[in-house]
Image (cartoon, rainbow, N blue to C red; front, side):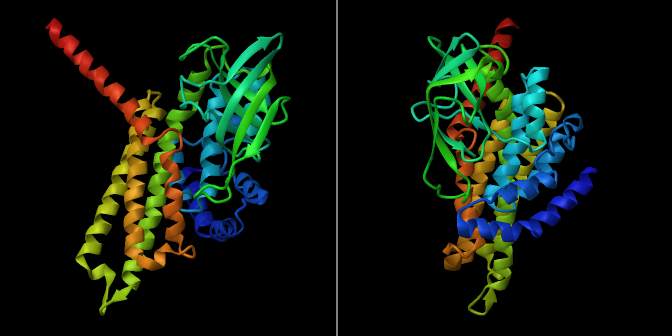
Length: 384
């Protein structure tokens, strides 16, 4: 299939079968396994993977444009599409040929599920990870905790990041594929979240958990490289684009409500305040879209995008908050009830500000680049 064919297929799905599925998820609080199977059978979970792996072989920019459409549907379904289309890249980044056959290809083809496992209850999400590993023969012995780990209820493997005992900072980090039935791994599901109904998160406790050395991606010390370059940069860009899609859907709903809702004999759409809000929303959305597509084009060109990805996610998530807030205000009291789609979008929007690092983390990534450029310019000036 060509890109236009995929785009038509996604729009047809989002506007058709996905809507009642989303309503069912919201009512029952569960994402049926049939949803996973349906998305996989349609090829929606391997759009960004190479054709040689069984994927659609789309460019990152093409995938981002499809992801924008997917973000019009229920948040939990959006998350499945986003994570499954992103995580293969992280696993593949340091995989040996044998690991590619064992882990990457089954993931791309929907035969197994892997979830990203970085966040801990007592540390940030990077060089301060505390979960440790020590090597004993052909196994690593893991001790520590991970929490807020998405898809903990359905994952076959956890792409878990830890560090060798006695190391600190970026040294000695590991990326390990931990089977859900690994001895010493306990998985406890966390309470339901505020939004993204039906998607479960887990609290993982590792007590002398044994994992084969053959499940390590790359060398000892490569863990954070797998986490950030393999997954987080493109994933942050993708999250920015999911914000664009959710915001665009919110704008659609708000504009339609403004046309339909009549107060004091005049539709809301005729009122200048509402018109100004709609114009601001549309401009916000387009600015975020362009940031994401720019980062995507750089990624397709093989360039580093850490700063651009952080900008795309930072602006996208904050834009989505502004847009959904205005959209809910335009709906008035009727939008506050759970029967309203904008109420769900408003709740779901809050999660994206946590995914793959908070806005404050994104600002730290961005400012490092700003300071580096300033220092370089000052150094060049001193030599002239």
